[in-house]
Length: 419
Image 1 (cartoon, one colour):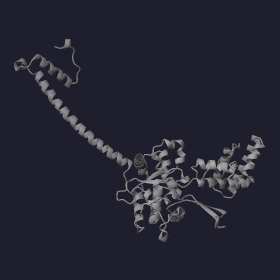
Image 2 (cartoon, helix red, strand yellow; image 1 turned 30 degrees about the vertical axis):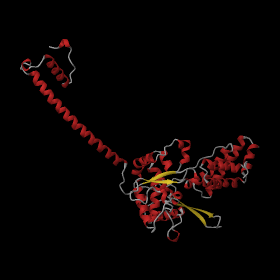
Image 3 (cartoon, one colour; image 1 turned 135 degrees about the vertical axis):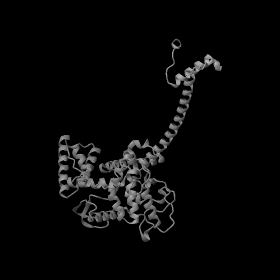
């Protein structure tokens, strides 16, 4: 690679800022190529053109280029979010190379469907035993589908044991993270654990720590599951739910040749639905939000978004577990009644009330004793019995009077005012 290549230096910087993600690098390359094809120039030619031009002229020309590109992409039926992706990639290239760019209008992104709890339950109801566990884990952990597909038994906390903790910790090893940045962890609730254990029983073998959690059916059971299969299965389920009037969403169609490296022509269009597998991950981000944005981002694997704060961000598992249990799990609950924040608060309040009742009863006993003493003192002082005759000294009488005043919670009298 030419170490002074404009394109490569920019892509390397982009990949570095996104935890060295190959997917990000590939996406930026593809999107930027659309711009280069449109202006019919190379990255080096764009940079050299700026060096030969004035700021004002260069800004105006390339702003017009980009607005024309927007019109071109819209004519090709690109979704607003896809148009924005191309424009944002071009902005990144210009920013990295210190190239000025005039005003470019920002388009509105497609507002994706917000799936609710009842709709998630309908999806789980129609899914097979394996896919049900996968979808539920995605909903309650926020992990990427590709990450869940790579999990091994050793990554799931005591999943083969009878006493699997709730919430159950999922460890994402560094080699399974996006860009292989750094390992992290998330959690799942009781429904996910139950569905997963039901699925693991169907494997018909003694599972080891190195076995994949999710695998293909049949003879290829030893191989990890392709997350793309789950995407397809999810699309089939939501289509059935739409046909049954349970879900209401739109699907757009764009005419274009779809090709891969191995096949010249797959189909003549692509379809985009308002509801996709990633909507389950969006569900997690929305309903786990009570735990705080930093914890949610960490559990979802967005560790690079924490930046330098990641070094100071607590990775104490038990602290995270407590926050997930109290702040996230109650809102991610789907069916079964797991220990919720409100239930925990009720239990704590009950214990405090019991303690307060005990303290109150103790205070009542002390007050009763004080009242008895007060009545006895009052009887003694108000009686006409001669105290000396009973063998009590004047000093003792004065002590009794002071005790009586304290029982009445009255301030002591001055010596000169005493009768």
